[in-house]
Image (cartoon, rainbow, N blue to C red; front, side, top):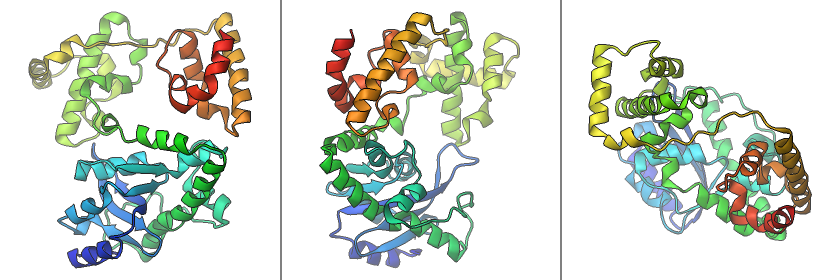
Length: 345
């Protein structure tokens, strides 16, 4: 395990010409808003090691390598790893291949785990003994370090097999498109004005209460970021709804902070809130949804896909109700569906 600047320099020198990097991270996110990055595991064709982030003061040499224009990150279920590294680096990878997404494009189950995919592709069984370990403890058990290294040891092999199958099935552009969608900065630095979308029970609020709830949500998100605490430690969803409805009142100090926040963020006072109500599905909608599902299942079979990768039931219902920003109306999904959707009109 790399724990000194010298060890890091030597490791980075050994992989200086490598452009395909299998990457995984271990982090802790229990009592903080932002993830606490603990380890970064990297594997190349010849080298595999893990970097103890908590023992190194200067990670800029590592970031210089990771964020090179020609470096391809190979990650399984990449979003949280990108986020954990982005918080410290303020950068995003230039190229990405997510093996979980790639597997789903060649008819493996959606959200397949790294362990299950590796067992299927490499016939290697990986233990899950340290999935709940507190990665901030030092020293780490040797077995935990080996567990962490296993998370990248087979990534390159998985990548090459999946890449070949995608090429055979003419889906290489699909995985490129999916990778680019994960490199949107808004995923890792969301606007506080959108925080209401994560509040349980928001969609059940009457329209007259929605702005107040959205304002409280934005304030809670701002405070959580500022204090680096989980948002529900600042204010639970239940309390937020209760304050919105006037069943409870904010303390004098909290109310003062809230009003001060609104004064400094005037755009919060005129937010556009578009809530999709949980309306009862009508017989006509159900019939149309069933027709679309049959159509999509037919296309999915032609392309060796699970139909839910193309469109799930929620997005189909949203489409039927007039939403034209659903995921299957753009990119590769639309390209394989457009003719059938035109016919279905």
